[in-house]
Image (cartoon, rainbow, N blue to C red; front, side, top):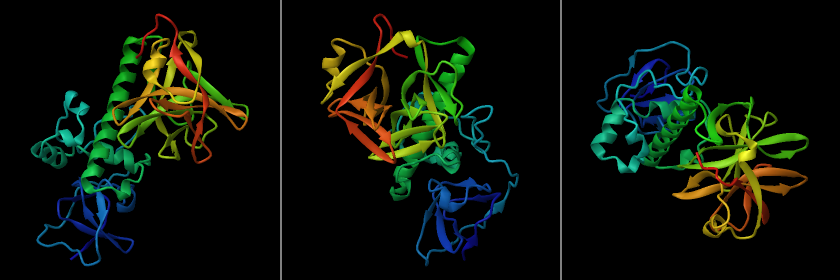
Length: 321
């Protein structure tokens, strides 16, 4: 037997459903929502062969039916999911999914500890080639995404309650509204471009933001340009930072001997710094890292490598935040 997928229904391990003629098998137990259909929530459902079916699995239970999506950025980007029953300590959020033992992973899955990340993905957050990953890798991405968002919200809340931690700092933002004090990173066709960053595939990628963009921010990753609605944006004192010319292969240690670059993210445990480069009549914020042969900027659906660039650095006596 295969059940038809329905919103407001509790699905547990072993459940197989059919949606629009395609069969899906559960990855993460959850209560379904109207906008969490199997095709758009690969962190919750995986496609399965036509001959898969429910063997000895209790029928799903209708438990919840209201129409509001769980992920609501208004009034808080990273509010706990309403169905999360397991507590996640702050220190645990610093661990990767692969650092957790099997018992803890099971606790998190059964207790809804991945539902916040699944909701973010369901709300349209870009996940690079998520559908091609193994089920364990999907869980790892979901875990890392929700922890980045939680930490970004926590940092922003601290700024709102206690004031800025230093001369420049990152705040969580959504959409096309650019906060006052955002650091300018370039321009294109008469539009100001600001410095942004966002989670992607386990790392944090620097990019650009503007009210001109489709969703608000753009990052580059794996030769792709990715549009994002939820991101962090660099805010602060313009006099605290300045741009330093560079060209060719970037060597972080040599650069740091004279200047202190502003760290904008990381990939594979290697720091990424904020860069800008001229391209096609504009100047575009992007990223640079140790060993890069130039700055990488997101542009027109892909990433462009530009040999001559500038790196954002702290003015003397300033720090990083």
